[in-house]
Length: 262
Image (cartoon, rainbow, N blue to C red):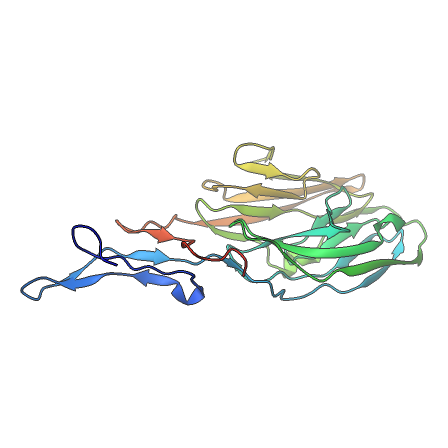
């Protein structure tokens, strides 16, 4: 497309992942000297609808210390984060948390926890969330009252080698969770100061998650669990890459005509 006063522009739409990459414009003057423009970076945002692992039906005994419903979210850019729904309502109470692998963990199971659950993949880029098939958590009897369990690390955090890698200025979701009976209280902190809701921070009502927007100066976060049997702290490293700036060029994450539903 010719531009007023000379020059041209390259237009795409709709786009797909094959358009990721660096773009430059080349031309030649009257004597054949090759002229190369500053470059633009195209990084296409997307959220796949194909879950890496769909959840399965689970049976548990009321009174159990812990039950987990598995799920691994789809690929996406930025990386999607998982929430869960029960009967169409977001699951976020004092006895539940989502682990870094995407699983829903329910502590000190009660009969009322039975029902249909759906794993939901969300994107900070604003795509329509992707939903898994609905699965059933059923109660298979009742167990005797459990003895006190001090706060204990959830192996899912170790299996995921949980850390957060992000570009400066990104939005990230930080997760927190431990096992324990009575159910632990959870707190997310940075530099020993508990997160509270603010312009750039959104904290879950039970301390099991926090969204940090336009992240620039947080290098680690502490997840703390505490009950009558004691306390545990998990240190979560946040590795930030410098915000990418193209010298004189343009960084594009969404292009006109791109679909928000993939």
